[in-house]
Image (cartoon, rainbow, N blue to C red; front, side):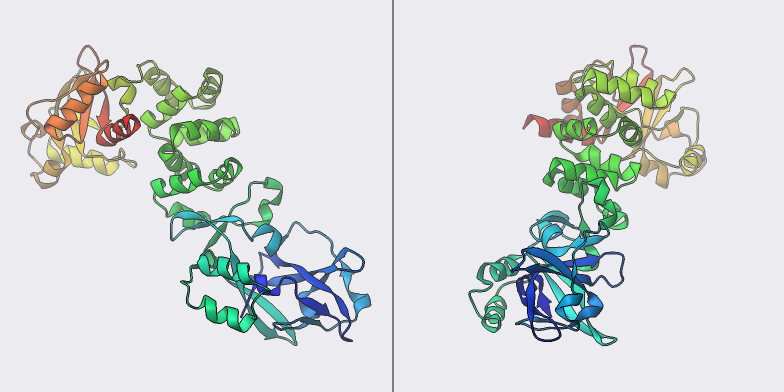
Amino acid sequence: MYYLTEILGLPVYDSSGTKVGRVADLAVALAAQPARVAEILLRDEKNKTRRAVRLEEIAAVSPKQVSLKIPEDQVKSFRPDEALFLLRKDLLDQQIIDVHGRKVVRVNDLSLEQKAVNHHTELVLGEVDIGLRGAFRRLLQGTVPRSLLRKLEAHLKATTIPWEYVNLIEADPLRRVKLNISHERLTKLHPADLADIVEDLPHKDRRAILSALDDETAAEALSEVEPRMQVSIVESMDTARAADIVEEMPPDAAVDLLGDLSEETSNELLEELNQEDAEELGELLEFRENSAGGLMTTDYLAVPSTADVQTARDLLLKTPDLPENFNTLFLVDEDGKLCGSVPLSKLVVAAPQEKLADLKSEPLLWISADGKEDEIVEQFDKYNLLSLPVTDPQQVLIGVVTVDDIVSLLRKKT
């Protein structure tokens, strides 16, 4: 087993033993399974040119040199190929996503396993070194004998990621074919963890990550990102793509984002949304930011106050996407006026024929749309609430403030 930094700079000898250059880089075809080196790039020290040898032209790799099966006159000039990924140029010191550690890390080195296959040598990609051991190895490379260096680094903790779990970031769409951001692994991350990753990346790489995600996952991650960064990301995106993501965001999060954007950008996004969503968000934008109307979401469930438990359960079964952090069912009269609220916990244990009105919480708590932030926080604190319904002047239910909105509000003030 070798490390990339041990191979770089090794002298390369042709079939007759003539030195033809030194290893300048290793090129990988990422589509190959398992991922392995496709070409070794040589730096010709005499002619100051770059040449390349294919995998099948390599006889062996040793700690001291790379030996070829071909004479020097068959070593061809290197031709850049967008399908090839250069380990030194495109991987060393670059940022990658550690999906297990849920963070962005920097590559210090890469292990490669040498295998003999069909009379030639293969170098198969092993593990990416993101820890102190790799940094230590690079620091002392060339100054300490390889055997001693291996012994010294054995005392340091190894922090690695198997190559198959590596999520490479590429901001340049022209080279996207070279890199593979694993959508399946990213979507398994919690949106808050994904948001932390996005925030740790340079601006251009944030767009690359969001471009690799489906609209729903991108919306969940964007909702967790710090507001100023949200604005920066959205303003750099294609309007149609940004609108698709905004449509998938919770209404309150979408409104907060639209309110932070320039009026021109906000209007462009609203024009791209379907009419129903655009009208809903447009109405929410009319409320003051620091009011109950500005904090609330319109994503809630309400049933007639005359309904029974079984009716409510049927409604839940027929609702494909329940509101985020759903915990309360609201009761309204025939005019839509708020009559009560039933905790989900009561709905679970009650008899099917029991009336919802008999299960409602007392007293009936609510706040008007123009209610101030301190009034909202006071009610949540005093009554240990998970949600608080919001009404218009006629007592019609128009939204709900949830505890996560309060947490976000308090975090902004700290």
